[in-house]
Amino acid sequence: MKIVNEPFGVTAQGQPVERYTLTDGNCSASVLTLGGILQSWTVPDRNGAPTDIVLGFDSVGAYEAQDCYIGALLGRCANRIADGRITVGQQTYTLACNDNGINHLHGGMVGFDRRIWKATVLPDGLQLQYESPDGEEGYPGRLSVTAIYRLTQDTLSIEFFAQSDKDTVCNLSSHSYFNLGGHASGSVGSQMIQVDADRYTPLASNNAPTGEVASVEGTPFDLRQPVRFDAGWDSDFTQIALAGGYDHNYIPAGDGLRPFAQASCPQTGITLTVTSDMPGVQLYTGNFLRDDLPEGKQHAKYDRRHGFCLETQFWPNAFACPDFPQPIVHAGETYHHITNYRYSVCP
Ligand code: BGC
Image (tube, rainbow, N blue to C red; front, side, top):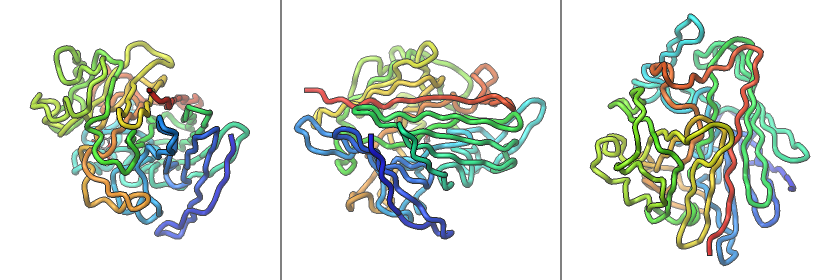
């Protein structure tokens, strides 16, 4: 694997942003020091044509002008916390409700997606580090976070480590929007999705899980066999209608590193297989992407459902749902998770 870096631009506050490009065989992936954003991932389609399979932008200003977390690392806590209320030990904290004033979402007003990370080239990957000060976005404890991107011939992996000086919340994820037809190819409706999970966590009207764990059996959430995204995303099934499509946490069976999901594009043959050791995965079909997004890479026009996300994570809203695994890292412990995105082509 080879890694090169170049200047990418400057933030509104004057901070320089670098782009690091990892190349291995005929795949390459670019990562920004802004938000640890995966800015591109180019792989050959079944005819060998280089195809960039993640949505992204060509300028820092465009990333700053959108609020869809495109390609970014998420923290300290991915997804929603109803009313912004967390409990760590005996203490309750109230965090900013940056999601329609009712939930804390993806780490708050200025989450890890908008921070500048410190990059170090390792022999086998790109290390990004961010020191989140005690009290940042209302969270207790100073949290030292490391994310390592690696690219081998066919697998892009993100490994996270974190340590805190006080017990705190830690639920790190990545918010890439994949489009296996190529980032500029429009809706992902005709692409195929399979999620290796029997259960999911239904949402309340605030789009945060209720605490219930439901079976996928007999519902549009049953993706155990591959189906087109558009077979289910406009269903009038209450949970789909509520979220305007798929925007739900699935619970892959078992624990440890295991299969989570597979998606593929019939036109390009490009297939993505996700494995992780996280407790859950949010399948989000870009229902809130809008046509007023900044112009995408190479003048691409992005709109609703032009990408899908598979955000490996702790189950959302865990603080209001005591039976859910709690995303707490204790002082002195090391938080550690890994997610692998493996590329292949089907004939
Ligand atoms: C959430 C969506 C949200 C999106 C932000 C996803 O993880 O589940 O509801 O709109 O992130 O772009």
